[in-house]
Length: 182
Image (tube, rainbow, N blue to C red):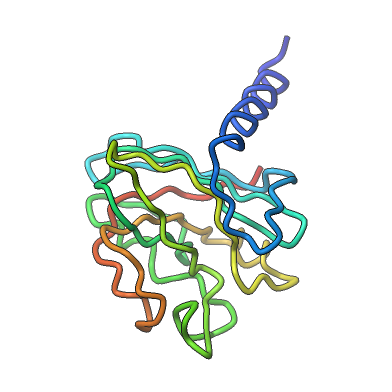
């Protein structure tokens, strides 16, 4: 047995296990599809915080996240322009992924950015499992996400207000992972 089939099998089991517990937030509820990329999330202290997967769905793309070690409540969840997660503040990831030069936020008439994902609701045990749609997907979305400097997946300390430009007033960056194409 080679490592490649074993890794694919393990990834399939993770997807199946995670799908049963996910909250789908896309308009069509579509979750079927291929894994396009994966990010291993870490907290500012370097501790593992979980995994995020970019999935191709029937109506575009979605991000599936399983994370732990977070404070309970709502947390901003975004794709950032640079695939770097230098602790402790993760500012190396740059701003939100915004190839369409749009305003921030789902509540903005000129928004949202490609990187503006829906807030995560972290449970009282500090964990979250969710699937959220990637908004404003354009034909070149994958080229934008997997460009030369990559893309980071970011969880913020507080909720995104879905309107404050450029970042939604979501507070500090508490977990980060670099998205790697599958």
